[in-house]
Image (cartoon, rainbow, N blue to C red; front, side, top):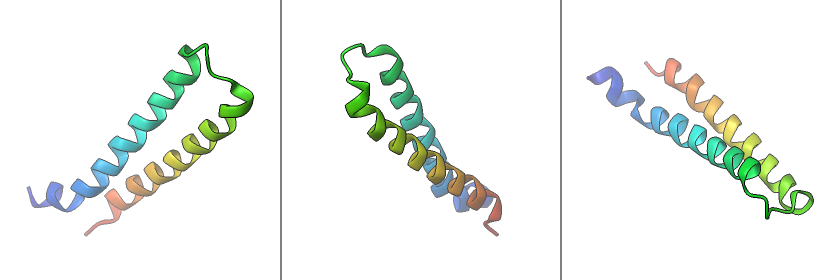
Amino acid sequence: MEYLRKRMKFLLIIIFSVAIILFVQYELNNNKNLDLKRVGIYMTILKIACGGYGLYGLIQFFRVK
């Protein structure tokens, strides 16, 4: 239990990062009303930021002592 308690913060970071990436990908593929020239760059930046933050959470998850 102590193992998971120390890592709970990083588990939440990973879960929310993946959820945001999946939501953005879903919206880009299924919403036909989006103007990809205007919104596409912001969605791409959001996906990159969430991916980096999720990678940080994954690395810290295994690094905690």
